[in-house]
Length: 256
Image (tube, rainbow, N blue to C red; front, side, top):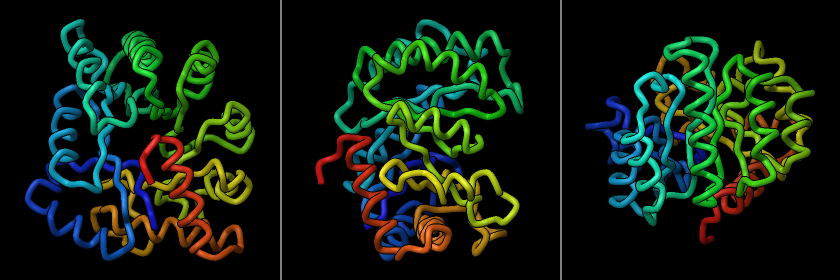
């Protein structure tokens, strides 16, 4: 069994392809997919998809790219959506100091507000952290004891940062770029971190693994990420698949 812990199935690319994409995922052994929200409207679309397909669950998020447009009404929408039965996490939420589509001040304000919602709803958080490691860690330090769990999506730090999150019991989610030799820090984390604290993800339709370079990513390609982790750790694919799936069941409080 494989579980894709992070995909964007509401993306325009999947609009007319989703049944075929899900069929390929099932044939590849994918039993669960978390579709991730990036705004209240995106989260609403993800919930609709999850309500239609039994293998899909939803996360309600508010991505830092859209922090400048957040307001009290949209935040209230996000909190209401978090109570839907198919919702298993709050995310993705966080900070992005690479693109700066929204101001740093508004990103931090939105992130703190979404963490407060996570504390209230008792949902685990899915964290987006791009080139914001210092502020991210400082903010999470103030919340982590009150959170119901955490997943660092598409982990992009080094081994030293990984150990800090592992000490909290957070999960590190490993994406397709682990299949690229140049991703040295990510490959080191995938090799050294306790397997019991790793998840695997596609972030589809983004971050396609090396064996499918040139194509849009999709949940079926999670197998290549699992294969690479198995090779890095010199263990069978079945062990990676089994343990990371059990991790996801625990992280998102799925029913087995």
